[in-house]
Length: 309
Ligand code: G3H
Ligand code: ZN
Image (cartoon, rainbow, N blue to C red; front, side):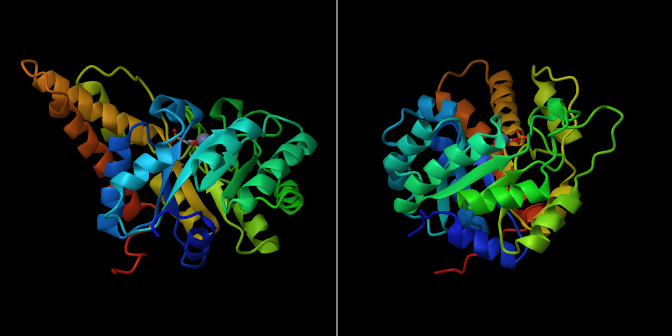
């Protein structure tokens, strides 16, 4: 059964030192594109919906739609809620058939985060759904604040108290285009990963805000009308290193979205006399396929993990 929760996938990723890519999808065609590449690569993958993209897709039948378009897919994949902001939002996804949810109560106090996460875990586990939670803060703009980095002892206490299945940690990645200041040397706090790993081996961690925003992506994005002046993402080698320790899921939003829009802009610019939507959407989908393919092969190390049937 290709549609799975993340428990088994995390176990394999941890033991074999790779990470599973989670991509922020917005449409069914994007889901299909991600699944096709992952099938070709024999790589597990996570289709990740923010609350906004779920609303855009029309909540209620997303799981059924994806099941319909994945009849020929044999690699395991999960349908995951990204940054669920409330217990209700998570429950609604679980009822709909999502196999994994993230409850992001990281903006609350430790006690409140525990209380909220525990309630989601209780409901999710009854439905065989895995739960990701978050301790610390992954907003790059808040890097100078005291609680930006995850405290390993707090993380371990949180995991034990909530029973969550994975934890998003803050080790220097961040949401947004500028993940590091202009003059800052890009680095990640591997010591935090190591400390959690020492005390809680086999526990899967998650990295948010992990796009690399390479100079060539930025250049291509701007070539046909995009206007992003500066960006500073996460070095690929740092992500690969994290994947070889205990990071089992890496979230990619910005690179994936920018790739799509780059393909779309180029097609729009080059086909001004055309009006069939697929003339424009197909190249956009090709760009996200390239993005997924590259990351699975060169960063996550997740290819050929699933045996041919
Ligand atoms: O939850 C989504 C991710 O954390 C996306 O981060 O935009 O840096 O790829 P990113
Ligand atoms: Zn995130």
